[in-house]
Length: 432
Image 1 (cartoon, rainbow, N blue to C red):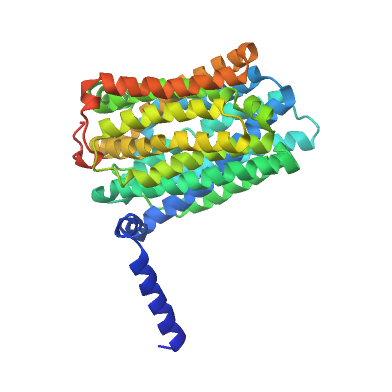
Image 2 (cartoon, one colour):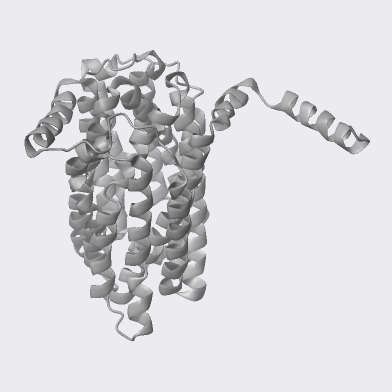
């Protein structure tokens, strides 16, 4: 060994000693090559999603100047997600790597339609709006497939840590992409961001193409209509009869009024600055969720009922303060802080569902949860856009804080949720 190699080894050893045990345990899951590939694919795809979310909504607002149109755009983007429920039984039987790859390829092609229309001189708000539900339909299988792939790649005792790492990476990338998108839109325009977005989807497709996810059932099984409907009913029945379903109801309160607020966010950002401010607001909220995701594994030994109620109340107060306090810096900072408790909740809830739901039902249960969320949030966005035209963006933004407060009240009022213990205490398949 050379002296250079020796010095490098010594430095690595010293660095390892400086890493806290909690961080080392969380990062140990990265030793799994399948998880690393999934993480990279999700990260690249998430970067594209962040670029698109800023460029598309701002482009609609820029072309129309109307919150009613941004509300409609939000609805068209999210409403197709309701069909995730129908995709669940298919995801549970599919080759997940193939599902993820084809989803990214399809999204790449749809995104390219907007810059192509601009190049041909046919760009209009109708073209931008038409691409939104098509892109959402292409992404229909991706979320449930990613959720179902994780427990097939990671051991059960590392599930919370894997979700924490995945959420940290996802939210870091998302925050970065939204801030970058806001700056790019301000400098180069929304159409240019669509081109960059298409490239990210192509790279994600290549990454997922080399991902091998172990199959739970033979992928070439025929799925007859009767079997499909039975699978669908099985996922819905589990939600109806288990704690997961009661957790979902609480989330729907918050998601509806969050949708109301998101519909007017471009108009609210316009009063503070412009597209760069819009990107910063979205990035700030994502950073808050990221911080909460990091903190999730530090509090996963505490009762989830307690952390959720206290966290949601704090989130509601901080969101309200963000709207009321003047100044871009203060607004972005408070928005970010208001999302921290939601980051903790998201990781804990996901780990609870992934552990408590039997593996053979996880895809369809995840799809059902995604479908329910995709029904209430678009409805909230459509209503929020119309309300913004009537009452103004600031008044509508205040409703976002109310949604989190309602979720806290629901958790406190339902005994099984209020007394719910640590997510790490959930046993495998107990909700089944």
